Image (tube, rainbow, N blue to C red; front, top):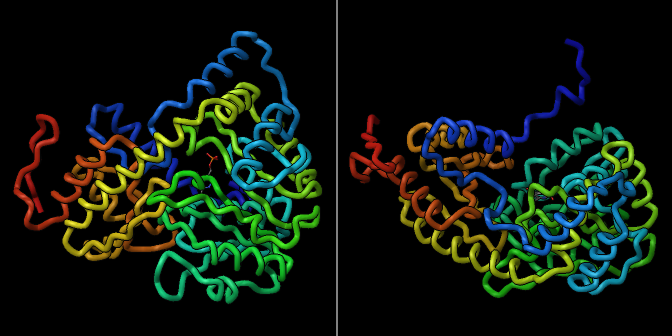
Amino acid sequence: MSLSQIGRSISESATLKLNETAAILRAKGEPVIHLGGGEPKTKPPIDALVTASALLNSGEIRYTPADGIPALKKAVIRYTEEFYDRHVEPENVICSGGAKQSIMVALQAILNPQEEVVYPAPYWVSYPEMAKLCGALGVPVYAEDGTFYPRLQDIEQKVGSYTRAVIINSPNNPTGAMYSEQFIAEIVEFCEKRDLWLIMDDIYHRLIFDGRKPINCYRFAKDLSENSKLIVVNGVSKQYAMTGFRIGWAVANKQIMKVMTNIQSHQTSGPSALCQYAAVGALNGVQSSVESLRMTLENNRNVLIDRLKTFPGVKVYKPDGTFYCFADFSAYGKSSQKLAQRLLDKVRVLVMPGIEFGLEGYLRISYCGTIKDVIEGIERMKWVLDPDAPNELYIGNRKLVRDW
Ligand SMILES: Cc1ncc(COP(=O)(O)O)c(C=O)c1O
């Protein structure tokens, strides 16, 4: 069949496929524990639901401006003032179908075919595919010291004449690493000096632990004029547990916003009116759900880390934020894909293979579900992997017996 080169080069979203696998197994009555997902299981804020319901009841659900409704832009402007101490105009804001679309249209506005976008590894699964969708190339940067915290020198070495942009995601999916203020300051300064676009993917910036505070990248920018190439991306998916609403946004200079809006207008038009109103409700409403989610995640992280540390041979790195832990399971096999498949086959626990994020031998374990799932999931994993585990395991009233 004749299909485009770009079309054929794009791989399926590993995370979305995993969700599908879990759903199919669950529909068959299998006792799946999903530690692979990327969405909090708490309810969205009531203000989001009430605001969306009011619009739904009115029946007036129409097309919206391609870059978002004025009420949502206003809420994003207020958010930017609160968290970034920066005043922007409505023309500096685009609201999209998730932060994912904001990043995608930003890359489409920036990258020519063959050009490059650089980002630290391990990286979010979509960055390389988004670059490919532009006919461009994603360039992962591995920290030379083997940590999850790259240094400016590591990035610098990968920046060449084809590089047009850098993406920084902190705290990071999949590692949970939050980069230091010094690193953010250095990267902002470096991108300004080298005239590179800098996309700050701040989607997890409020979900951070141990008393950390979100880092405001604008503090380190020398150029805050309309020539600034800093693009800050955020959204409601993670912090408000509103993944299904598909609302995210970007803030940047007016010129790129116009181009991103033109692109988005031909892709999807403006995001769904209903979902934009829900996002307005979340952003303008009572904020306690964010802190309560953050505290739940911090507790889940602590429990997960304590239990993971009891696995012989597993190297655990304490996440600074997000709801992912990226642990080195290479002691149990070279292929993370095979290991993840084995855990699913043997004990119906779903985790993400590290290779999808650019690092073999690791597993990404999500702790955004219930604490019960985290504890039971880890227990089941341990039963499969620990040679000293008992011969039998009960899942509900199903008895499993080791056959390896
Ligand atoms: C690092 C990162 N950026 C962006 C997104 C996209 O979020 P949204 O649901 O707003 O499209 C995700 C979602 O998993 C993510 O992990």
